[in-house]
Image (tube, rainbow, N blue to C red; front, side):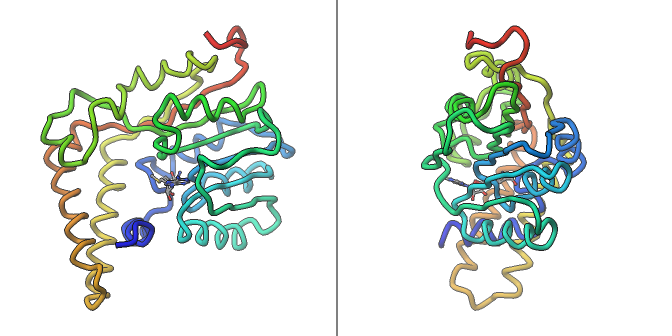
Length: 256
Ligand SMILES: C[S@@+](CC[C@H](N)C(=O)[O-])C[C@H]1O[C@@H](n2cnc3c(N)ncnc32)[C@H](O)[C@@H]1O
């Protein structure tokens, strides 16, 4: 089954495609306090909700990059509907290939929930740091281990222990790149349940309405296996947080 079709169907009910609540996203938008002439970049922008909220709140200019044709179409549609005058561009491309016109030029650079693009959390911080101006924000969303994962869980989700850090490891990693952690938005179990549950719901609803689609069996198999792994292990094992770093914070002008 086409990967982008799978994610389009399973995330139809989601406004943000990560386990952060809308209230926490709004808090993040409030905290970053950008000027109207600020430039923002979001790698793996998904349906563009974060960057569109930044444009609505502050009038900033921005670039959203995502590889999914479905999500880029959703983001462009939201842009036209909610913020038609906002100077936003959405690019359908691999985030790893995106090169800014000028290095160290953005006032906020984000990559929420797609650190594989840069080979993991550290690689993401390094790449985003290279595109961020002095006195800017670097915002990343990343899973973390709440406790040591069971081998069966790792096998079920096809991840390694080394795929993610603990919460404190994720938070501390910024120091290696001269970044100061300014805030964290840590998802609650309710946030996770909503993120996971909406995928089960969306898949079952779509399958009921598209019984003749040849992708139904594979889609339901994958979603139901993911549901079982989440209920058996993931709910107690994997956390999620958005880490808000400051580049050029007082006393951290140089990488440690
Ligand atoms: C977990 S979702 C997060 C989306 C968005 N940041 C959000 O929080 O709503 C991961 C996103 O990464 C995108 N993606 C996956 N691989 C990518 C790549 N190589 N380059 C750009 N985007 C990619 C997917 O299409 C999806 O939108």
